[in-house]
Image (tube, rainbow, N blue to C red; front, side, top):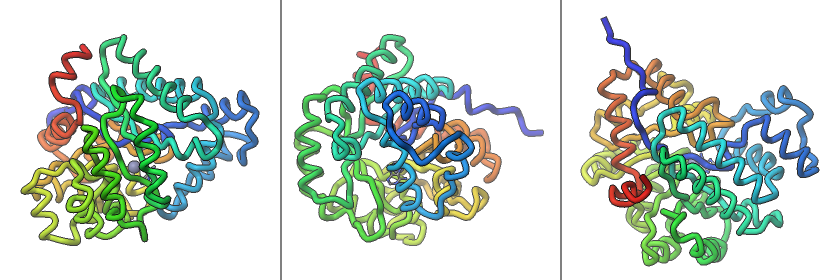
Length: 326
Ligand code: ADE
Ligand code: ZN
């Protein structure tokens, strides 16, 4: 018989979660009321029935509409604080939160309100000494590189809070290569780097992120399977992939979890991690991603443990900094 195994008890890191994607429907309604922002939804039911996506673009449009309710430092504080509390319930001991300031500054929200709000949530979580964390500054691939350069310079004031530069936004038609100098700048500042690539875009976007942006990790990356040489390279070089199973099914990258390739990628020797991406939209936090993927793919306890272990190894915080926090 199969021994009972509960991934919940296993310490893990979450490396791919967008703070904008942690906005739960109840919070969305509360913030809309508090900030007097007009929204397209009248109830939870309205919201939940709108959360059906056909691809990445259709999700991003819903996500962008939702985040208009985020206006103040307090909103960002409460959003990040709620996520960190929820993540701790999943035994997440280290969380790297993606934030896209340009999604907010373009609506007139001060850059400081975004960064200070999230930093204050981190500071409170850190006081409880049970979770370590850091921001990944996300720049938008569908906007001019000047926006990305400006975001990096503005974010330097939060030197201790920002661990890394990331690249996000609609992928198809937006290869990562044009951001090479942006990523060089981040590296010069001592930041780690990562990029969304091979989510719904082609495998050569993954290769380009590695060769031209010289990223330390790849977000998603699941399309690498179409290019065996690239897959071997990812395995040989140990480049971690932050895979998000429920996100991939919600955005129709795979028709269902049974046909997700994460088990094959793991068996091909890649450093695979499991993450939630946008948990308020895709139906689950990190443990839910583990449990549902494990059930659909028949992942053994050993395989689940190696996925959790990979997340700690692929984190952008070194052991010394982790000790400083505790
Ligand atoms: N922003 C939030 N979630 C994203 C995803 N899965 N891909 C690209 N950009 C995103
Ligand atoms: Zn993402």
